[in-house]
Image (cartoon, rainbow, N blue to C red; front, side):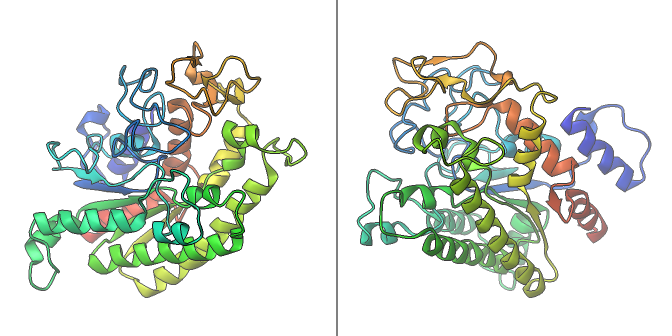
Length: 377
């Protein structure tokens, strides 16, 4: 059953309406969608010259080949999880914030590829400045605040109508953020424990900012199984493997990060009882797909679809996807990994389905929909 139809069917059931005829007629539970995060969620705020150091050809083919049939500065062959979320909610795909000419009637994507949770100054102070993206969650907060100013929203008390149009019927999707913070300290004296504490603090502060401004429906993605990406498998020692065949230290790091994040989310639910905050368990959703990858049509769980043909994993940091010497596979839908650091549209689609319709969101996404419908907005 198609992802959009499943959400649609749930919507109709919740509204006690007659049986649906097509997903295109689905009522819009949310009028707008706002997204934040890094390259897993970025729909075009970076390009080949401004993105992450090892993936500097995102503006070139074959990026975007599957769905858009052209590069859109998404780090995939097609759509991302946030794109499937928008389509499932009968909303248009989100334009990137930096596209000032785009139609923002249905929301904006503020996510930035290469972005960190921790402010860039921290990495500068610790001499970690190897061409890392000088953008953080603080940048996305500034962009969001600029957007609020542009529509006349100061606060609910003085500009209720303007702020209500931004927040009342909107879903805030906070994509995975923090992987880059851990990646950037590789080889430095900064510990992963320090990064976990600082990045969780920054993420919590960011969420508090959204909630205080008026966000009522928020989904927060945890970190994924970064140890299962081609990039990390390529860089790691072969002895550092877990039962899934992935990089054990990286996956354990992400798991510990997600546990700490969930503790903070529980506290935020108490602090903001009027808001609905959902944790999207990207880590375990990915794990469940990997454990049963053949059932989902994936024959290559670790090899990159697009990269260097001279390497076993089809990946080399000097010949990444989109560069002159790179090649891409015949059928991306059989691959989990797209360019070594990011996933294929096919994988993102299955992940989205598990987060929206499966058991990997806490509370379930259906609970958030019911809360929104019962609110009467």
